[in-house]
Image 1 (cartoon, rainbow, N blue to C red):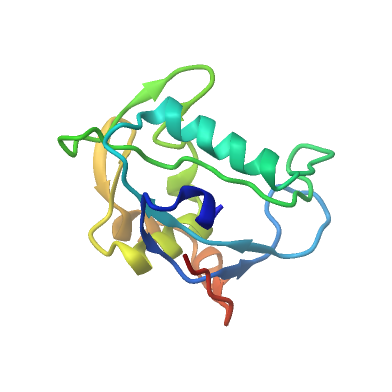
Image 2 (image 1 turned 180 degrees about the vertical axis):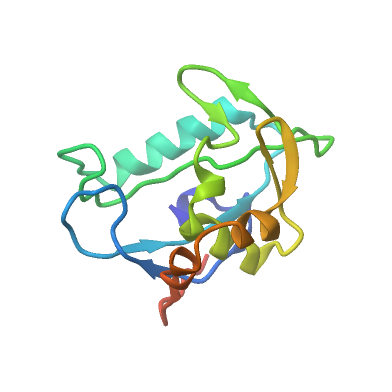
Length: 151
């Protein structure tokens, strides 16, 4: 996915391990966040790219919330002027409707963009504040690994 998004990649977080999420018995997840920039791409273009990358990696997901080989989510998009794009489209909700509840998104994101902001319930919020609102166990369950993603 990192290679597939190059040269739009501006920053890559470390790789974090978390317990599986979603209630299906499975091994731990590996998570990372990328900051990408392409003024010609809107939310729909990023979603298409995400799906193309999953297909190229021969993504396998047999059940909802179950094990999968790759999951590329679009968390937040900004227009060329830097304004966050909001969308309630059936295909793409922006920002991601549950990102603010997931330490496995917020922790890696903050590691590469400490001033990150995300609109929640119609209001821009500092991602640091969103992370602080999560249960301590949720935050503690996100562990940096020795794995490194490179371009």
